Image (cartoon, rainbow, N blue to C red):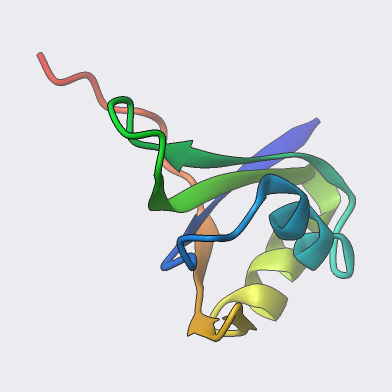
Length: 85
């Protein structure tokens, strides 16, 4: 199984590969994605990293508050998506 982690306060230029590489030091990364604006294609400053279930807590503790690209990132377990309606 894998768990999804929310990663906020990302630098605009961060790539999905850079995000995955940063987390791979602390967890087995399944996937990483950066959320982009639909109209401009520019990063919205947050993303998600899917990690092996047993590594999730360690990854949150190790990465939350650390610097990535000169910014302090926020990492916590992602909450299920809420419907707008």
